[in-house]
Length: 371
Image (cartoon, rainbow, N blue to C red; front, side, top):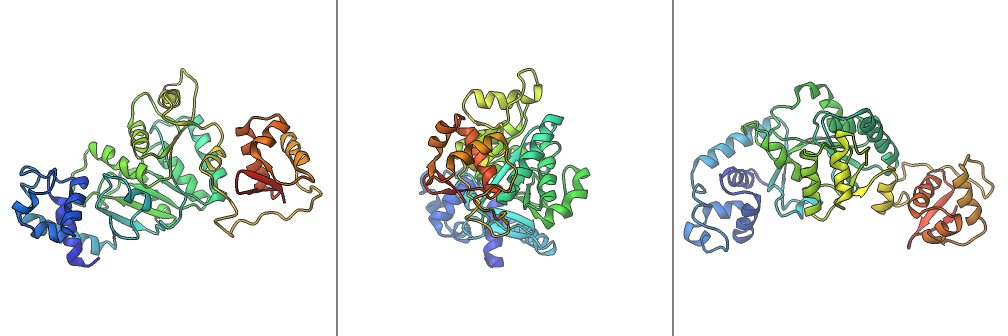
């Protein structure tokens, strides 16, 4: 994208009353942001759904001036811009109707990684939430997912610190421009996050800091991810808004259940009760339900080589599965569940543990066999 292209895209993004949905409609009709700003008002009014009020401020020269100023800020701070038609733009977000036409990025973000999940929740996270969140990141680490969150207090920073600890890429989606950081106390974590990922926002350096920005930011968290995981939430809160957005995009949503009288579990329990989220009681439910396969994505995980004789320590239930599969051909997940007299979700978790130990391996069609 040339500087001139970027200036016109910035100018279009800066126009009041023209949101991302309308901006993309105009760009698709005119071919480019520059084409929109150089088109006549009469021709623009012929576009279905475009009225005089919508494009009232479109031709004000101040938008190009402000765009040039913002471009200087972008260049001076080594900020990467992601245009919604670019290859580097987050692929899943690209398919969301209200995704930003421009994103601003700093750090070492590599969005080619296919596994991207959002981990969100209350800012008043409890000890129960912290323990589950850290366990979640630890057990998902072998799958090398990108962990997306909002860099806020509580759940967000817990997830992102755990990601850094396990050398996972993590992305903080900000509700303000890249000229500041909120909360200020999290400034000490910025360099670690940038080294292990980075920050994304669609806000300018000149945008006012407003609480409504957080709700707007949530569409990026939900949209760029394969699934959204809610660790804890009160009866109302931004996490529930993000979960609702994720559902509207057709994404998977998971919620961690809690006791019925715990105020910070009410939101999660309601999501599960109303079937707006999968119940998440075991971190390994995530790779199973999202159909992640260890063998297909990395050579960095060294699985212990074993013989048919067993040299690794197994639990009683793992031994059940091993003994059933011993000297057998590949078996279906449901068959293993029936023969071992254990529920399917339990078998799925056990099979993943056995895979990590190098005992079993998955095959297409939900088949499993011993190594």
